[in-house]
Amino acid sequence: MIQPISTRSIGLVLGLSLITTTSSFQPSSRRSNNGILLTQVVASQRKIKPSPRHDATSLNAITPAAALSAVGAPIGSLAVLAFVILVHEGGHFIAARSLGINVDEFSVGIGPRILGVRRRLVDGKFVFDKIDEAANEEEGVEPDEQANDGIEFSLRALPIGGYVRFPENYNRTLAFEQEDASRKARYEARLMRLEDASAFEKTLEAMAAKSFVFNVMSLGLLKKWQSNREEEQLMQAEEEAELKSPRTVKSNGNNNGSWWSAMPWVAKKDEEEELNGDDKLAILKAAKLPDIDYFKDPNLLQNRPWQERSIVLSGGVVFNILLAFACYFGELTGGRGLPTPIFDTGTVITQMPGKDSPSFGLLKQGDIIVGVNNVILSAANSEPNMYASQKEISDIISTVRETPNGESIKLTIVHGRNSDSTDVVSVSPKRNDEGLASIGVTLGANYLRTDMVQASSIFDAISKAGSAVYEITSQTASSIFGLLIGFLFGKGLPAGTSMSGPIGVVKTGAQVVSSSDFAAVVAFAASISVNLAVVNSLPLPALDGGQLAFVLAEAAAGRRIDQRTQEGINAGALFILLIFSFSTAIGDVTSLFR
Image (cartoon, rainbow, N blue to C red; front, top):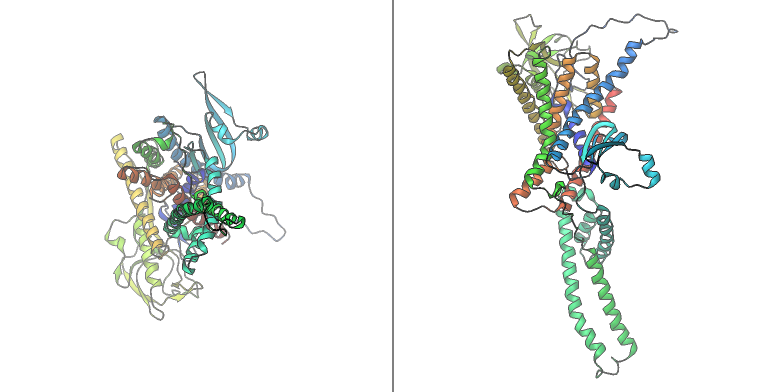
């Protein structure tokens, strides 16, 4: 990874943001009031006894066990996330070090450092020193100076991301100072261009100079247009300087000229013109972005062949897939078996419709919808599984929302699992507060039970674990790609699909941990690991897949892509990912108070 620290962190945050959208291992599901399916990893169904009534003056005391569970479950969820991130970043780290590539820091978590040690090689032995940032600040030791002396291992405050930091391949401080001077000169050059520019050109110049969003939306074309104008301006100034130089020398050096041309103020005017021309040319030359002097150290990641860089960039994804395989393999060989939820066709009405619901008196709790408008649901024609059940729910919601005002929707239902007869009822959807058509019911997958799949041998365990990894990876990839395509075409989230950020994932993980079912915790860890692998494989800038795309493009073209261009593209993508992650976090916090 050749990008700043935050690039890696956001990549993992984005992965967590898409987890709830694509995967779950739930034997039960529920739907929120706004009609969005929430899938949860729940290992067992437990009946909760109603608490006894208390009068208004009594205090409801919480037991120590309940208090410990309330605190311990979120901590356990964060521990699972941190472990998955540790494995992901460990893949990058091990791949880099096995190839002899220098690494500055290995960090689990983002934000302030809680604990850190530095590994150094002293007299042929590894020595670990505790990192004391307060003492370093007092002594004026810069982070770069610390990084040059061994590898730092850090645990940071927020376990929702992580990174492996590689050394820079150029002096970033010097480059920043040069770019800052160049930026000021470009501003002066832009003012010169605006003097003779048209209104349209002035508008484009302002957008290119001041609007980061427009530059990102134009994929850098607007910035490229501005760079071409700067080059043309410099070439024109150089040509003008060459044309003016002979005339100025002739005017000043011609002693046989007219008496008027020999006057002091006329000579002074020529000198001022020459000086002004030199100043203009000097500004335009300073506006040109200086070349960066890259280091030639062969142990830097950026200086390695594309094959080795590809291995390092792919290490995190490969380790996440291996972690999921190990989770399933361990359950098949050393645990009770691989928990496999079993579903039946149809979608269950999980709650009794309210009196003001369009379905009141027509549908009741426990009814199973197996068809819509005389069309049998898709899962009836395929193997019922979790993803097929989610698709059924999504199809029903989409059909309801697309029903025109005043028309009815025909539902083919079965009254309970023990019933063999089917009925067809007509329901007229109503618009809710959000303007969406609804029939006023809560839907859930037709879950039957969870079977514990056993392995008869080691080879059978390898086969079944591999099949489980392939299934969840393919389904996750299909869901995420479908989600992204929907966003690109303005369709938004598919009906019946929810999206949660890191806070929502931690909440779901806390529910899993509180169940005290180790198999469910393992399935949760495998689910997160696969999601991170799939998301980080996306060919988006600032993610592993995007970095790998740059490397493969270099290999195909046979030459290096300008590093500053890469950093600019990654900065734009990072900005978009920040907005996306912030929006999911807001949604998570809002959902906590519903």
